Each structure stands twice: as structure tokens, then as C-alpha cells.
Image (tube, rainbow, N blue to C red; front, side):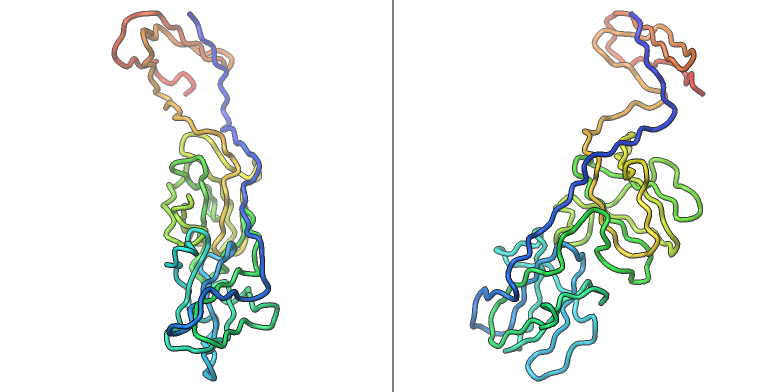
Length: 288
């Protein structure tokens, strides 16, 4: 029995429809969750910012120094962090005027220049007017520490990042990405991974599953010229497979490799039926 397989030298790069998510922007200002109690408690939902800040003044006090105070993951079960909810507690405040930003102070949500205002103790929720995440978006402007790449793997268990930051491409498949340490929409619980590239020059990026399946932006790669935090959703939802190494093995029920040959780009593997119970190597790399 003879099997013939056409060899292809180039890695195939696949692309499918980009998966994105967005939140509808509803309401024109804050919504009262509850009144009374002690202090003012703000809940804020964003699908565009990975680390939002709140800039505020309590009562007749002074405004915080821009960009304000970093918000933390929501602990309110009705407003789950994995749905993009963050919170801030002004424990002693009885009134609050506030705005939100991207954590650096470049992009703001200030209620259409009217600011958000509450005049009584209680808990209030705000859905950001800055919304509509798309894959590849900048989700936090540069903080001076280079590029921070977020990737939602979708069907891949362990994504890799392959990149060129000006000194040449990494050796494929690149570097394994770590599970996201961010909260909100870009958390590990939502399937996000992260990798930091310490560079101030432009970067060119492609992602893969470590076994030859790629998201390379439809063969164009992802190119970013300004440092910051960027979030990408896997565009290649092909089910990953475990590809054999060059020195691969046949471990089927009752087959053994008798010989292999290569001619004009065609690899021929000759098999014979037997009762083998152990792995059988199919020889040296004929393509070397």
C-alpha cells in the first residue's frame, strides 16, 4: 500500500472572519443602583479600555491629579468583572463629580463634556460612551514600557507570538503567550493571553497555535508603529491539530513503515500490514 503526500515548503497561513465583540451604549448618564448607606460607589463598564481610571472631585474638594485613580475589578455580582465592569469607592463622599479615561489620560469619557455628577450617597453605574471594540484596537495608550500585546485565542489552547521588532523575526513559532493578568473584558477567564515586547520602534506580528496554524492578518501580518497595549482576537478559528515533527512516527493499528522516498516534491511512504504494538519511526528527513 503506497501513500503519496505533496510537500509544501511554505507555512500555510489561514484567515477567517474577525471575531469582535461590542457593548451597546445605553443611557445618557449614570444609573442609580441603590441609594443611602455610606459613601459614593461607582460601577463602570468598558469594552475599549483594559485599565480605566476615574478622575473626580468629592463635594467642594479639588480634582484628583489627571488621569486620576485606577479602577479595580467589580466585586458586585450583578455587575461582573468579566463583563467589563470596574468599580471605585469614595467611602466618605456624599456627592461626586467625575469622568473616566483610558488609564493614561489620552481618551476620555466625560458624559459629552457635561461630566457625571451624583449628589447623594449610594451606588451608581455607568456604561461607557467610548465603546465598540474591534480586533487590533489600542486599549491603553503607551505608558513608556513598550508594546503590550493581548490575544484572544478562541480555539487555541496555547497561542504563540512571532514578531519582528526591528532586529529580525523570532524563530518560529515564536514565544508562548502567558494568560492575561488583566481584569474586565480582557481577562484570562475570557480567553485572553498577553506578551510584552520591549521596543519603541514599529513591530510586525503574527500569532500561531505552536503547530502550524496561523493568524497572520490574512498574510499581511499585524503592524503597529506606536507603543501601547493592543488587543487582537484570533481570526483563524480552524480547529488545531497536533502536527508530527520531521522525525514523526506511525502508531496505527497494524501498520509498519517499510521504506520512504522523495522525488520532485512528492514524499512516498510504503506501509505494510503487521501486528506492531510500538511506535515505528519513518526514517530520516528526506527533505533536508
